[in-house]
Image 1 (tube, rainbow, N blue to C red):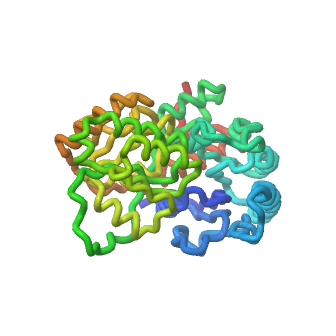
Image 2 (image 1 turned 90 degrees about the vertical axis):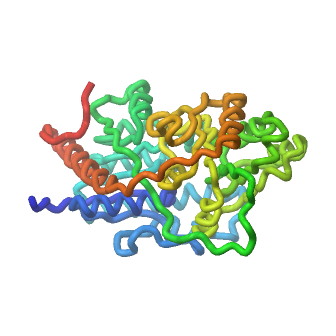
Image 3 (image 1 turned 30 degrees about the vertical axis):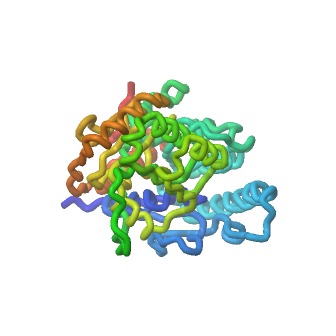
Length: 393
């Protein structure tokens, strides 16, 4: 076996938005011979330590992340100040440690991040993963977040997206095709088993909308679709909505009440522990993704290994990865009637899908990402790398 030369990468996820993804990516990169250190925030109380402690440098928001004494109206201001301090520390780390490549996972405060990246790209290769090619999947953003969202992509030497449609979206916005590489999002798995239940499983067909509740995820569409099914079908099913709300749920709860669906909708509007997730997934018959917009979905890759049926909008990773009538059903975005028909069909047929075989895709993702790092290093030094994974159009 050829011995790979050591390559040191500093990866950045300041708010630890995607800890399970970060941990899985670390596994793949280490297997590919990359020495990884993550710049991020400390793990919060009650959260599992996903990243290896020895591979984390937790200097972002160390004193402010769980500051309960701060009034809600001042929290965005404090977050901006703390982010600025974190970026200053990051710049000092990059200058001192001289990593072979800096790989940014998320843009948090674009105007501040742009200034930091402008300096970093002068010192070493800069790679950026664009998880969402539509900023924050179209949800409401603060003024700071809206300003210059595209600029960090201009500064990066190479960009990673997870879907072909995401790559095309960036090309359509003027990003050079040769800078963009499609590297898939790998499968995720829970580390715990379901908790024993003292009560029998609900015999009704169980639809689940899981994950943080945001406008683009289409909970309002799901409510309307369920209401349009015949009463006899509704009596055979229930919907569990589980996840931390990132929007005002009061209008949707009122709509559920007005439609007489309170007995069919089980609302769990809080962050779910891994044990609660495992128990919920064991009760699930069909995951629903009535999303208005998405590139890649961490929830999708978390539940993909299960044998549950899936109903999803024909957008992003769902359109590219799901096999219709094998993995589930694809419906047009925001088409409530089509969503209702797909749900009704699943209640009547009660389909199951074959759980996919275990995959070593994170190892392949690690190898591809390492190759992209080498390409970014070549671009930084102004030379062409012969093993570039990018496709220039």
